[in-house]
Image (cartoon, rainbow, N blue to C red; front, side, top):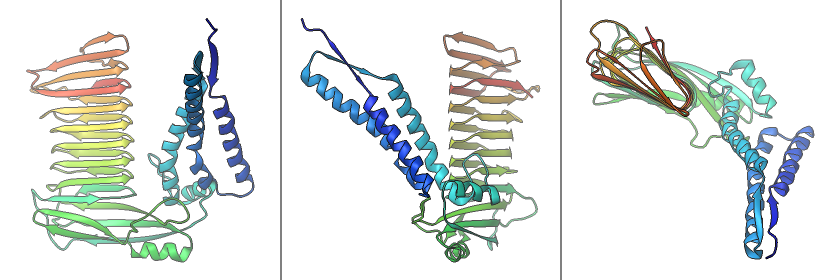
Length: 377
């Protein structure tokens, strides 16, 4: 019986990856734009993966060969992929002067953009819109944002919608950037009981490279507090406060804040934190990568807080007459509270329960990777 030969894979991929990284750094020293060179990051896991496939096919054809994958090769690939997933929104936001979870504006944003090689010009334009049609209780305000922060505030004593916004653009030249900024506007259209804020003049194709312009629109909206609000964004924070009706607030990259809302709430983000303060009613809030916190002023319906990677913090009122049950489950973490709740730990999994009154309203807390904290208030 012939001895089994060990064939290690990952070495050639590492060498190719180091050559790629070294080439990027060398080109940067000679003035090449770093942000364009970093777009080649997928070549690192591709080089390692290609080597694995070739050596696997060779070992299977020859026989008598044990293929051993170097651990560092897998680790390097995972780190580079994570880097690439984070780099994509960062490159977009350096063009707009801001980043997900971090507000980089003005000189700081420009300095960060220059550091990544963004050789473009920047321009701004500000305006205010007041709707001609009134909104009443039961009506709904809808706004779909692309990039930039959104804040919606309930204001008593008015039945109109007011939107104050600032447009920040970047393009090849100062004139092109200013023309683009001046051409962006926000209009309000009402159909039935739904008023929608719409943006006009934003290019259909945007990006962070020199061949594409970029637009960020930061907007602050005031509405009658009895109006329902539905706001979503792709890149940027979303804040809704002072609404006595149902609220839906979503974003892909950025934090979501909902304060002093008495209706049902749906709050969601993929990358960022979710913060709820002084809320009551039905609550459904979650994040894929970020902490979720909720300070309940009352418990009048079910509440669900969840996160994949991050912690969950929930503060519950301790007053007579309330009826709720807390069910907390941390898959890889722990459940902790100063309240006299029952906590069970099995391996990495921790669960806890706490009941007040007849326990009618369910508060469901879930964290896959992170801790869950329940606090009294």
